[in-house]
Image 1 (cartoon, rainbow, N blue to C red):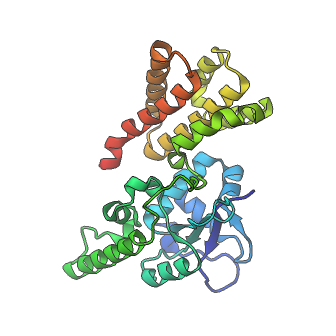
Image 2 (image 1 turned 90 degrees about the vertical axis):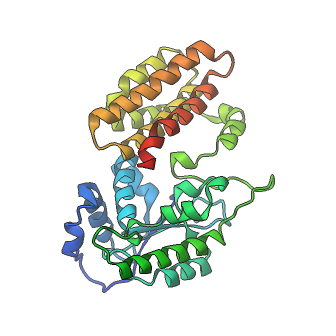
Image 3 (image 1 turned 180 degrees about the vertical axis):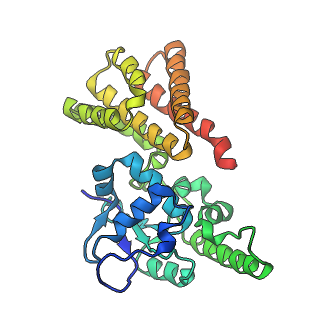
Length: 311
């Protein structure tokens, strides 16, 4: 089923008109400008889903552009924490004029009344749901720049802290055994515990056709990593095991692509993480080769990208 419905702020109806400020906004980059132009061409009655954009343009391409547009303030994500339906959990709102000329507090309250709360993937883990992390996850335009005067800085600081407090008071911060992990659309949102618990139960349901589709997607979007895929194939893993690892590697590729603009650095990062974990598996893994590889490579990815996230 499609997931992650995307909605446009109400504007004057008509053919596609795009403000020049958007088309020349360097913070969007060419990818972000292309994404926003594509979103703006849809009529307001047409239902757009992020998962459909993934299928049409490739997940890596969409996520890279999406991150730029979100950071710049053209897209804001919301999540309904009361449902496990992938069709209803996520809601994305976009606006061609950013949201800085918008009453954001009133809009957050309006979305909350409809069951949705501001969302950022860094807040998936309960331990990360602090006021500081929520504030840091808010759109970039809410932070003052070098040209901001004292009055502007005070206004933005006050608004940012008020929004963070609003979200903090409503975010679920306790997890009980009866609660299920909420559905995820991004790699970093996937809970290790649920993934490992469900792996054995779902193993018999995975077909070679499904595995091939993951491999096909990987080959199509990340041909530069085919040497890594070949090394896995030489292990003669079961089709279901290969499917799981390739799916994980695809998501690793997406996360690395979002972090590096330089192609050489991106390839070097992926191959370094893969090589280190592959060697660790060969030396230290005695039982669950697939589970050890998947969990280990995720940890290595987070450790590798941590210095960049702190800058």
